[in-house]
Image (cartoon, rainbow, N blue to C red; front, side, top):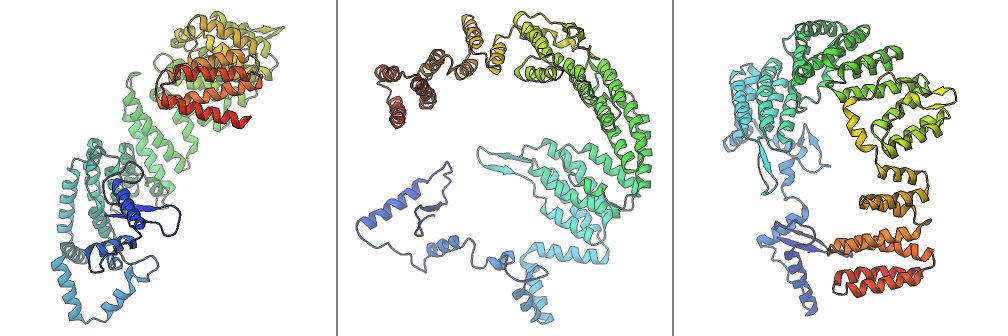
Length: 587
């Protein structure tokens, strides 16, 4: 069905039930408008629908947004009055019925709606405490749902997803009936099978979300089960470690529950301590074993903190730093505690232990050493680390950081000379060898990671970076000289060319115009509309440069030349017309 409305406003509003979904109006909407315009052209009245016709009823139901009896189905509008979630008119109607009349109504509902029959049966079972049949039924439903192969397909708009709504409702009903242990046992089965289902699913997270809603009810039930408080915490921490798909996203709320006292957290800490003692030390290449141990260590740290035993945290982190390779957590904790010297020791220790097998961790610890120097106000050591960063990974960013650090100690000219010389020659200066009078940059506590030496050597001749630094420092003559040298070696790509053209457009307009013209010709050569539009951006830049230098004749001649050479390209001519129109507006 297709509808088109105007309602006295300027724009038309339309809807259509056809599957077209590519933006704009579909052909059915256009057809309706054409038919209506034909009636207007002939000065004929629009034909009206017969009020008795099915199309009339369907049309006005769609305008209302819901059928006439929607209030009876969904509880009425937001403004309708309710009593215990039931519309007041329904409640009043039921109050007027006799006992026999109510029995007839309920019996009829049970006959016509199997869900009502099940709800009545389960309600009676929970009232009498005989929930065995309900639990068996729910266990079977969980088994059947978790056996579904969950997937979605965006190509054909099909999907096969399990619906856990009924499981959620029945679990909540059991919990409301005071059967927390039954909910917990069912939750364990759902957790075991649900994780496997989600792991093998091919959806957008819908299945994990459905199971998470069910597990939310299980978490609510946990404090009321027969398990001791410590057993509850152990179970919860075990599940959190297994939670790869964030299906226990509300576990933090439960951990903050006042029912778990300081004593309970200390008892949990003892359990986790024993677990760590029983775990073998992982080998350097066993990353999965390290991760498992690190997870238990992190949970023990949390137990210490919640149990007000914070004095045990640092010894734990120091003890586990090497087997877990978690020096970063230890160093960060020490820095937050203000123990800078201790943090420095563990940065150096961790660096030496990880540099061979885990360069990434070593680099993090190197940065932490610089942060320690910053916190202690050792500006010369900070500059040494910034120099180390630059020589390890030259870029405009590391160059800026180095300049700020060296300027702070008044030695930027010396350091800059070494940095530029490194890019020009590839010769790495020793950081401690850069002198100015009696001053010497201190040697950083750790050296640069050796695996990056070859990378640094390849970057040492980076002419592009020299150009970018010259642009940063507004040395436009050097920018032009370096760029021309780069082009001799056929290394002047579009990115650096655009940066150069923009930077020297006022000081060296001829070079900028040459670069932009090459870009325009290349884009036109693609023979695509979007390329023509992009070329227009550079033509406008050229237009501004020509006008600023009072060279309008050259600009006009270039437009004529482009029109002559590419006169067969109709789309390009339209773009040039737009550019020329803007040119006239400037005049």
